[in-house]
Length: 351
Ligand SMILES: Nc1ncnc2c1ncn2[C@@H]1O[C@H](COP(=O)(O)OP(=O)(O)O)[C@@H](O)[C@H]1O
Ligand SMILES: [Mg+2]
Image (cartoon, rainbow, N blue to C red):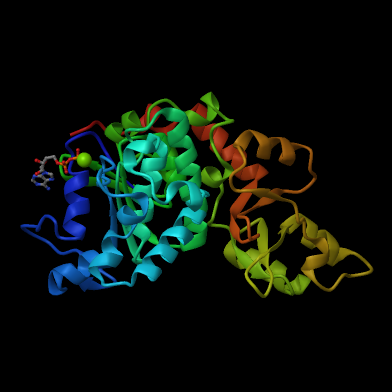
């Protein structure tokens, strides 16, 4: 997510990626290759673009709008029709109803869904999205953000998304790129940026601390730590002890053979069990397996954690893949940061 005040160069950056704007200096690498070495037509075909204004063609139907790029690539009528139906299904729009409608017969939210589908039509690896939800009312915007997260689970694209809305950035981003006057001031995952803004500009852009103000509105995904030490679930107790000592960690996140969350063990539990007369042999038997969905609010996660005897919860997505962990100690750290933010004490002055 590229974020920053109006005029800071977000759209320009996005347009340099597909060479709608040519840079005067520097390089942009796409899959490791400078984009200036690629054929510009090919480059643009490999990247879907969703515009700031929706920009559907008013005289073309939904199907025709979705098929703009497939058309250029010479797909057959049947292929185009099939792809349009398939894509409409992806955003749960009934193709019988919508496929032959014109843009003016759709709501703003529906038009923007079609804008996204148009960008996805030829299955590009990369999606460039320029404030795609900026013109929508808050409720529709929030729905489309949620849908984009679900869509992304399905399509797994590389998305470069421009916004000026910090809530949108924290909700959608893996990494936020904060820009100012044509420069990047900070690149970090949302959680790190919220906790450690680089300077006063970033801190002010983020605004008042969101977590204390709105714990229902902040998802566990934003606060989950993904720096935890991971280990295989069939580790023996002695190996687990050794690993925690080496990595100076009070707990391990266990993963099964398919990289799915298999529980959390604390150093206390492991050392207690290791001293026990009837030694258990594997850490799995000691593991706490409680999880929380990454889309739950922090508020719900804290309630779950407070009632539980475990040191933390695994934060997982719908397929039970590990997104991170949410631990009691981690949460206390976050609270301390929220209540006594670093920048209130020792942030350097803006230059
Ligand atoms: N790195 C840059 N160097 C010089 N001019 C820039 C740079 N980035 C943006 N601009 C200029 O600043 C103006 C606003 O940029 P734009 O990308 O539209 O901002 P945003 O999308 O963040 O509102 C444009 O006229 C653009 O040409
Ligand atoms: Mg812009």
